[in-house]
Image (cartoon, rainbow, N blue to C red; front, top):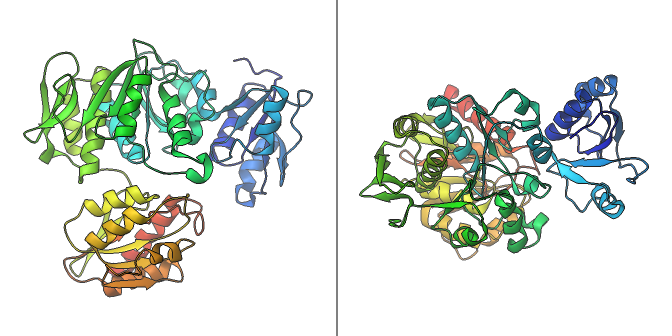
Length: 455
C-alpha cells in the first residue's frame, strides 16, 4: 500500500484510531480523524496529531465521497452501520480496519487468536511460549497494543501473536495468518452482530484467506467451532479437553497434555503442572500447544512456559486474602459464558459481584450456575434488574443491590465468610460505569487492598 498524498478518513478517536492516524501521517498520507463524540480526555494526543497535519473532525462525521476520500479506516468499536462506512460503501471507497492495515506492512508470520472467551489468556501464553522458544515476538492486537505501531520492526524469522476480535475481523480483506485459532463460540456482541450466524461468520474470517500451507486450530468440544473445520482450506488441528483425538490433534490422556500433529503422540506436560487454574484455562493451554506446535516450537520450551505462566491481569487474578476470604478479579468476564467459567474454577462458596452493560446476552445459563456455585450475589449497573429477575424463584442465600461499584465491593466484604471467595466476574461489559474492563478491575484491586490495609 502506498499512502503518500492519499486522502484517508480514520473513524474513531480511540487507541486504534490514534495509532492509525500516527502511522498514516508518517506515511505522508492526508489524514482526517473523525469521531461522533468530542473526546476531551485525549486532548494532548489530539493536539499533537493536529500539529503533525491531521485534520480533526470531532462531534460528528464528514460527508464521505470520492471527492473527499480514497480510503476509510474504521476503528473496531465503531459499527459498520455508521454513516462513514455506509457512505463509503455506496461510493465504492474501500473500507478496512487497523488489523488489515497492519497486515499489509507485516513481514513476520502471524499467529492470530479469536473466540468468545480466553483470547487474551491464550494470546499472552502463546507470546511467552514463542519468546521462551527463542523467537523475537510481538504480542498485540485486541490485547492492547495496536499492531500497526510495531509490525514493521519484525521480520520473516520473527513471530507476531495477535488477539483479534470479531469487530476487527469484520473489516479484513487480505489478512492471512500462518496459524489461525478459534477457541470457542458462544453468544456475545449480539447487540452489534444481530445473530449468532453473523457473529460466527465474522470470526470465521480469520481463516478465510488461508491455504494448504497454513493451519487452522479449532476447539473439537465446541460444536459450532468444530464445524468450521469444513470451511477452512488450511490444515486443521483440533484440540479437545474431553476426547482422545486418535486421528491427530492436541488432547488430554491420563491427565497428560498430548500432541499428535506430525503423526506421533508426544507428551507435553501434566495438566496438574499448569500455572493457570480452571478447566477453561486447560482448554486455552491445549489451544496454545496446538498453535505453537504448528508453528514449530519444541516440546521443552512448551512445557517450561505452561508450568510458569500465571495468567493475565483481570482474568481470575488473585488480589488478596483478608480474614480467610480470597478476593479474585475477573473483570474481563464481560459476558455470561466467561462468568460461568470463572465460577466453575472454584470449589469454595462464592460471593459474586455481577452486572454492568449487557451486550444482548441471555442470562439464564449464568443464573443456573450462580445458583449452583454462589452463596451471595451482588448486582449493580444497567443489568442489575435483568440479572436479579433471574432469581425471583430463589437459589442464592442473599441477593443484594449496590448503588455503585464501591458499595458492591464493601457489601461483598461485609457478607463474605472465612473460606469463601469474593469474585468480581460481571458477565457484562463495563461501559455503563467505566471506559474499560481494565479500569473496573483496577478499581476493584484498589478497593480490596484498601480494605486489607484497614482490616
